[in-house]
Amino acid sequence: MADNVEIVEGCRLPVLRKNQEHEDEWPLAEILSVKEVSSRKLYYVHYIDFNKRLDEWVTGDRLDMKKLQFPKKEAKTPTKNGLPGSRPSSPEREVRKSLDLNVQSATAPSRGKTLPTPKRKVEAVSLATQVPPATPVPSLPSSTEASQASVFPAVRDPNTFKSREDHEPISSLTTNGTARRLIPSQPGRKRKANCGGTDEMIKVLQYNNPQSASVFLPPPEDSQDSSDGIPSAPRMTGSLVSDRSHDDIVTRMKNIECIELGRHRLKPWYFSPYPQELTALPILYLCEFCLKYLKSLKCLQRHLTKCNLRHPPGNEIYRKGTISFFEIDGRKNKTYSQNLCLLAKCFLDHKTLYYDTDPFLFYVMTEYDSKGFHIVGYFSKEKESTEDYNVACILTLPPYQRRGYGKLLIEFSYELSKVEGKTGTPEKPLSDLGLLSYRSYWSQTILEILMDLKPDNGERPQITINEISEITSVKKEDVISTLQYLNLINYYKMWLFSYKKYGQYILTLSEDIVDGHERAMQKRHLRIDPKCLHFTPKDWSKRGKW
Image 1 (cartoon, rainbow, N blue to C red):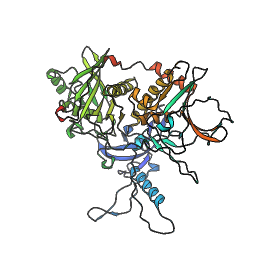
Image 2: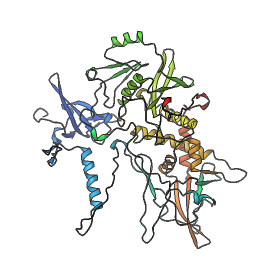
Image 3: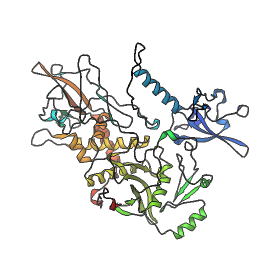
């Protein structure tokens, strides 16, 4: 049947694949390319609503030709040269078109009048990083509201608490893990809300049951909250964030079949701009110490006789047991940095590749044995970041994933921020795996602090959002978004002397959250020891330091 119907690029049809349970399934896929090898046609397919790393070449017998959908041609539109043109539709364009239609319909004036409307900037959100939004929770009060903290029992009594729909949605979690405003409509009242002021005081009330606790925020002093300090959604561009508008059919397809790195063979997930003549090879060989790429095993063996490196170039700034970290300057070790970026691009889809590595520092984590220091993963950061980014790209190589090395890289990046005396955050957008790792790390770190709070002289302990941020070096917006993601913050309206009403924010640690955190910490064996870190931050604002 596949021979009777010509399948072209852009066609969609169900394709047979194995799921995680090794069962057959037929997800809808798009044909990105067709080639013929030994008089046999192969089709490169992208599974719709699946990550691009699952894209693969398939044979015609895995295609369900009965449900073949040919690409729809869009209406012809004039191009830059004034000539009409058309192109087949794609899922990205359909999403973009629907977003534009929604914006137009939402801003269209009524009664047929033509009114000028201000241009609205719509931030593009990468489809690969979209996650279901968390349950909306209220924002936190400002510092002026936190001067006098009052603590109330954690029992919800109908005479004491009167809830406004129990939980009032004020803000929600965006796809990148940051707080975004959701202002509820209230007729006859203008409301301003603050999210995360400078000194929000939190009092912790310990239950008789040691497995649970509540954190109380004080009542506001007035009805008008300051809007300063509202964390906006992160911008979708950064020093290494790729521009998805320039994607073409070449960069959407994997171009390297297999990479041999030391004792491991890696199957790339995404496109990486290695030289064109190397993309046709069945295996691309890399020196695991200098990361130089070679076309054959004989070339690699000849190179190893000349390569004197047994560890990444740069300074070793951390060592404990077999784990070491090396700091590499992108200007002083340009060739190694460029080779590292080429390797990392095979497994990172949302970052672009810069051959100008001068503005970056690379921190490579290695594992030591008798043969040398073997690369496990790395992260890069800008020497000077105006956005308080402490990570640009972060990657754990596939053979070392799901072993705790990802959290170790994240923890090390925040240890560097602590030495620098700064708070930091990773560049957005994060990949799907990166988002999971960061959320898990933020959750464990913040819960660890809250659970370690002890009563002081019989009084309930106090802590602020800023203090949590200073202790962990996690940016304040990430602390707030993590509390929201865990769905710990609840908002209640309360009565004082039966006539004055004010709001109360309560953070409750349930037994399930506490038990889950303790189980997760028992599995987390790899931790950074600050005593083993030998790092002196530099002032990169002075160009002479470069």
